[in-house]
Amino acid sequence: MCCNMEKAAKLIVFSAPSGSGKSTIIQYLMQQGLPLEFSISATSRQPRGTEKDGVEYYFLTPEEFRKRIGQGDFLEYEEVYTDRFYGTLKSEIERIGALGKVCVFDVDVKGGLNIKKMYGDRALTIFIMPPSVEALRERLEHRGTDSQDVIEQRLQKAEYEMSFAPQYDTVIVNDELHIAQRDALAAVREFLAR
Image (cartoon, rainbow, N blue to C red):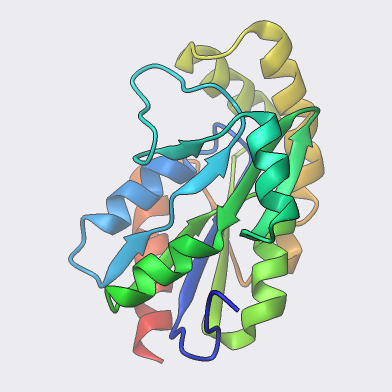
């Protein structure tokens, strides 16, 4: 087996609909001097803007992603849309564990809940909730990275994802970013102190 789950100390899992501010909150946490290391997810989507392979994501073709699923290389994965996969490579857990740090995940709701199921109390799950679907629409449109069709798909997906929020350990509504950042930091610090 490629990863020793018994050895893993603690994991922090973030999930949220696209455009909720999850990445901004995670970036803030990573700058707070805590022993955290970000788990880079794999995806079969194309890079956006200045995204680089091995930095924001490991970019794989849908065919490569399927092959690696078949090889058992993923801790968790999800086909979010047709041929649009996201997942966590087991090799990321090994990489971060070797650094002696707490692994921070940014995964979809099903992946987050699956990790929680595997790791139990060693995993803190945090759901970042937008203040409303309309606010989410405005953020996605303002971001300017997706077509209107993709934005509509994301909004439909968001309502589905938000239905999973009650299953998470902590739900943070990102209405005002500085408050959401403060609440996330408090939850993480409390978890790390246990």
